[in-house]
Image (cartoon, rainbow, N blue to C red; front, side, top):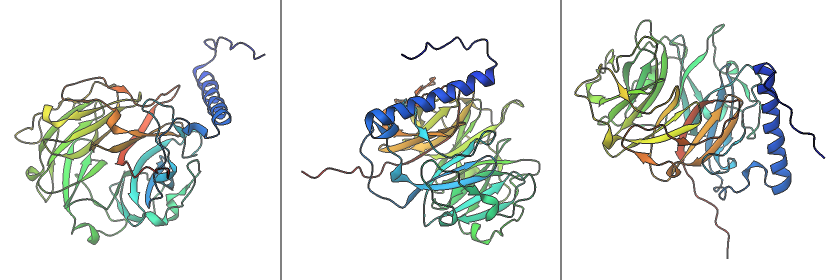
Length: 350
């Protein structure tokens, strides 16, 4: 007979959070024992083997890559499975999907630029410790990664700063940037996000507090850039996405709730640099990614749990909403998210 769960309210918050964390681990283990399929019970069939890699990097720079097909698709609102094992005090910070043949373009919080082959990162299991990126990148003491993006994009790379400045690089410029060189967005600004654009897209710039603006990328000068959004001093920029009128943008908060905001319901500004308007009701957003029908979304939490689910399960909205539950979080919070092609499900032979 199992003992009754005692009242934990008299414990300190950190002790209570740790106990709840252990309870989650126990629940996952019980699910594995009952189903024989681990936390992937009730998931859709796995996709065929692919060269696409899910890349996870911690705030302290521990990184790994894992083939995407090893991540089973779960139902939206699930708890996910444990991924990067970076240890207490070093939560995951970056989550992206790139092909093993690509290179990663990286900016540090000191505006230094680096490039790293995806294939150079250690390949590991879904639950793995990874290795320090300092093995490949000559980072300075206390220097941290700020932006990581794959090079398999469009004609222009749009780089966003914490204070809303946007700087545009043509694809032909990037190979000439030297590793470790200073590539500033603007003096005194720190890079926070990047996206690829075609040359004829609109740019959707989003802040942590859920404020956003949309404007034509043609209005960003190729030399020096411009202010994309005017922010309250207490707010900071989060993400930038290339969009069209028919696009949807996957937005998610650190509480695990998300939505797909349709650009048909978000008016384009005549010029950049104005104040934003609400894109999604959330205390703190963690992502903004252009998403298409048939793609999957991935979210990773501070405790290193990751979930993969169909983005089609998220109701698309033209107006402002609080979102639906995308990931179940207990004493935890979302820290990063991305979208990816869904892959091809395996089909059993008749």
